Every structure is written in structure tokens, then in C-alpha cells.
Image (cartoon, rainbow, N blue to C red; front, side):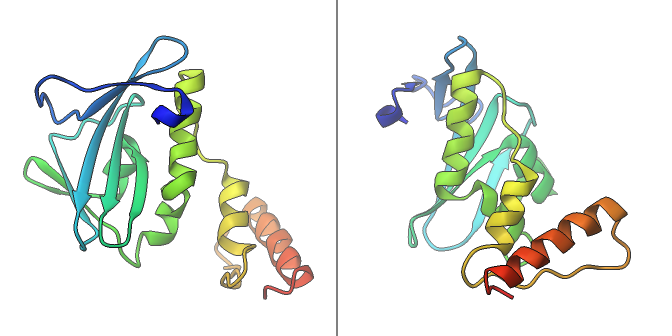
Length: 166
């Protein structure tokens, strides 16, 4: 973040689990909580409050994987255990969280610092990343999908065939 010219503040004391605070170009502040694990993709946040100016950065030391999650996303994919929200990144949510991993997650956070607005991931960009990269899985079109969604999925299937992915 410092390399990007972002002003980062570190609280004097651990208050409410906030590890650092970023000031956006518009003068707003973003609270960051950093969670690090050695080798298990299991991250706990106590007393989680979902708000647009709060991010949770999850870092797995063994593999150097990092996820930069808006608090709303962390809450959505976590399970409640008393006062703790526990996020376990596994096969059931790994693909959905891919858009927040590594550089993709940091880019979203950087965009927020520049505009002061939380940028929601672009659905088309996410689908391209998931289905139009080398080694991607073929897209499956279910009957239960809405017509607009089916149309997008058919477009992706066509692109997969053109690119030799599927």
C-alpha cells in the first residue's frame, strides 16, 4: 500500500481489532484488519460489523496467498460461532473468493482509496477470469437459470470454444 502512495496509519493500541487505517483521496478512512494463518485457510473475526469502510485481509503464510475482502464479503462467506465469524476458504467458496485473491483484491482496495467508494467486482470480469483463462472449467448452463444469465453463459461458452478452452 505504501508503494502505491497510500497513507497508512497504525493504531497505537489494538482497538476493535483494527490493524491499520487508510485515508482515501477524498479524506475518508478505511479500517483494515489483518488475519494471518500458517497453513490453514481458516480466519476468525470477532464482533464483525459489515460496513463499506472495513476490509479484512486474510494471509496464508505457508503459500503466501492473500485475500482482500470487504467486510460484507467476509460476513457472507463466514459462519457465526458466538461472537466470532469464521471464514474457511475451501472448495465450496474458493471460486467465489478468487476475485478477492492477491492482486485482484488489492486493486479493489486501491480503487476504494482513490475514489472513496467501495468498488463492487465487475461480474463480467469475474466470469472471464473464471471461465476464459487457460485450464478453466467448461461453463455449465442449467435449465433453472434466468434467460439473461443463460445468454451471458452461452456467450462465454462460445468464447471458450473460440479460444480452445472447452
